[in-house]
Length: 81
Image (cartoon, rainbow, N blue to C red; front, side):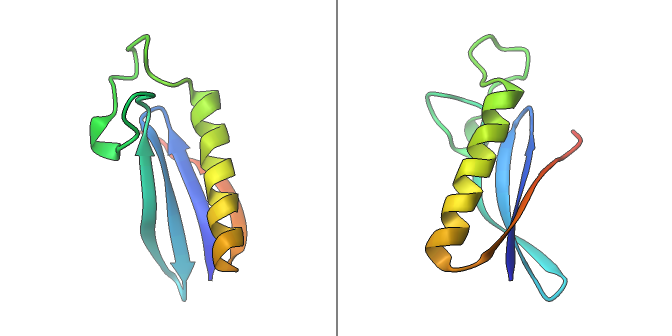
């Protein structure tokens, strides 16, 4: 089992890859006031998190989750929108 992070301008998600299947286990949007994936801001909104910050959060969260669950961390990938 491996955790992999995917990110883009709308936010990020962590997926669990297991035996060829990929399942979302965590997601967060680009809104600094409400990180729920359904609360993302338009990407041109001046309050939206930058792509670099989203990337950092994706990696930080994914590594933490993998460590906490004793799962291999597979890194992050940019996901085209």
